[in-house]
Structure formats: structure tokens, C-alpha cells
Image 1 (tube, each protein chain N blue to C red):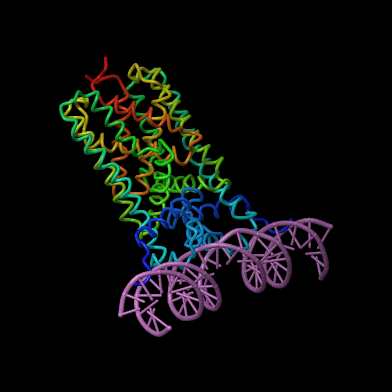
Image 2: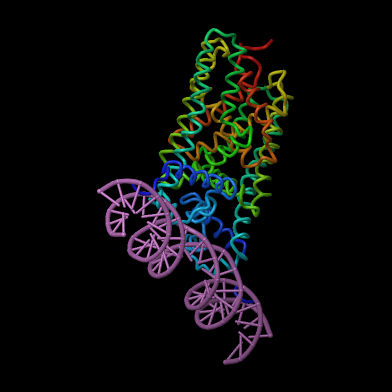
Length: 208
Length: 208
DNA sequence: AACAATTTATCACATCCGTGATACAAAGGG
DNA sequence: CCCTTTGTATCACGGATGTGATAAATTGTT
């Protein structure tokens, strides 16, 4: 065997560098050269691990999707074991779980920033289209499951349509995330959490 | 006097061409050359009317802000004359007014697409920062005014905080607009309108 | 007709981009 | 020790971009 380098680890290093560039300067500035510089590598090395820019971009977005998806999957398992608990308790967990999609700390802020830039780019970049679509549909599936579970726990006001409420909550989350990332001076992270809390509470039966 | 050309009209033509390029290919592809081609002009002509790319971009975004703002201003005047009408009627008008911010037809779709691309670019482009900030704050001011008027007409459930509801409705609109523009396959225009309607209705007193 | 201002059209230059090709270094197996 | 495989580093090419400089055409005025 020749030189042994952890290939997957290197690819992850490059992708992490790409994420830093995207967060700092936007996806437009994320060229092979700038990413290589950020990673402390030569452009030739980057090209050794990725066939070209398209593969790098796709791999990066897939990595981000997997990262966020994996974190959510763990939370969902906890959430699933909550059957039988009182509705207010489930509501708290729902808020916490949905908060994972908001830029409430630096880590999540970076993630959301990357996803926003990639999703926006995907509108006119066919190479990212399927991944952006997956992002949107996966979010809706998650929100729907949470709302459904909230409903069976009696935490949902009667007369609400699941389809509409799914779309409503998803759009609310998208809007909060986008504005918090694009205009942190207009929408602070704490306000994000407050609004999410208010909405989920508002879905519950009237507090009288 | 030398050659007489309507300078402002020409600038508008160039900006319209820029909008077409942005909608079709994204803001990344909106270079001086592609815009000139789209406008059927030589790049030299474009540069004669705009000092450089930065001025073109700023003028374009300002034009879009003014265009949308002007249309809303007219609607708001109508909305203001509705004092004394029954709450359901005012609610209808509020929905219609807020619908102006959603991509419910091709014209509004193009506008929202441009604003989304510009606002996203503004995150890392200082030249557009103040305009993007204005976009976000103006939307909030509009939403707040509508909610306040709805409240005085008795169309708002008691116990709702204006600050929070403003942010909630604004984020809902932003999320709907973004997704409808970026992923029309996931969120159809008609669904947008349905969700907005449902939210505004939900703000009213319980239908019991 | 001559002139001047405006508009249009080109050229050139430095910079950045993705990519193909290729050389160079390193490291483990024969 | 050699050699094959893997990793690293450069070079070069074609294309695109913003911009400075400048020529050329157009049009109204004098």
C-alpha cells in the first residue's frame, strides 16, 4: 500500500473549509481556490479528492443535510418516547425540537446560513436542485410528524387542518431562520425562540 | 442641445433587463455584459448610464423597493378608509393586502424572486446592506400597521402581543414567499394564499 | 457647414475561475 | 533497492468579469 491518508476525513476537512468560506463570504466566493486556501491545502489536493466543483458542492450540501438530519433523528427518538405525557410537556419538547432548525447559537447559525445560500443557489443551479428539494420536503415531513404527535396528545386545538398547519409552521420556521441569518440586526436569535414558542402555544386549546 | 434621450427611461430599461436576468439565471449571472445583452445594448452604453456595477445593483434594488412600496401605499390608503366596517370585511382586505407580498402571479413572482436574490446577496455585500435592511424593516412596519388596525376593529383575539404577532406574521410571509419562489414544486401559489388566509383568520376571536 | 455634447461602440488590461495535463514527493510492498 | 500507488504542487489554456481609456457615430445648436 502507498501513502495512507484518511480519505473521508480529508474530504470532511475540505467541506468544513467550504462551509467557513460560505458563511464568511457567501457561496459566490466559494471557488476551488478560496476553499483550498481556507483548508490550508493546494488546489491540486482539493481536486485530488473531488472530481470538480460540482461534486464538491453536492457533497458539501449532502453533508450538511446529513449532519442536521442526524441530529434531528436523535431528538425525534426522544420525542417519540413521550407518549402519555401531559400535553404541555410535549409542547415544550416540540418547541425544543423545532428550535434545532433555527439559528439559536453559532453552530446552528452557520448551518442555517449554509443551507440558505445553497437553497437559494439551487433555484438556478440544476446540480443542487434535488438536494434543495429534499431539504424542503424533509422539513415538512418533520413538522408534520411533530404536529401529528401533538394532536394525538391533545395538544392541538380542534378544527385545525394538519396540511395547512404543517405548511404554516414550516413557513414560519423558514421565515424566522432566513431573516435571523440574513438580517440579525432586525431579528435577534432570542426573538426567534419567542415567536416559535408563541406559535406552538397558540396551536393548543384556548388557555381561557 | 445634443442628442436627446430620456435618460431615466433608459436606466429603467437596463434595470428591467437586469431583473429578467436575475429571475432567469440568478444574481450571480447578472454581469454588466449579460445585462447589456439582455437589454439589447452595448456594454459601453450601460456604463454610460451607470457608473459601475455597484451603482447599477443599488439602483436596481432601490427601484424594486420603490415599485413594491408604491403599490402597497395605494392599497394601504384603501385599507385606511375601512374604519367602521365589520371585522370580517377588514380581515378580507388585510389578507388581500398582505397577499401583495406573496408570489401569487407571475408579476409578483418576479418581484419576490429579485428581492430574495438581492437580500441573500446583501448578507455578504456591504453595498446592498442598507437596502436589504430597509426591506426587512418596511415589511415589519406594514404588517404591524395592519395588525393594529385589525385590532382596533375587534378582529384580533384578546391576549395577543402586537410585537410578537408582527414578527410571527412577517416571518410567515417571508417563509411562504421564499419557499414559493425557491421551490414552486413544494409550495404552490394557491397554497400560499390558503395558509395566509388561515393564519389571519386564526388571529381572530374564536369562531366557536 | 461647423461645432459641441451626448450616446454608442471597441479595445486593452488585470483578475479570477474551472479544468486538463503533468511534474514532483512520499511511502509502503516486492 | 526499485517501483507502483497515492498525495502534493504547478503550469497553461480558454473563458468571463469590471473597469479605464478612447474612438466613432449621432444629433441639436450655432
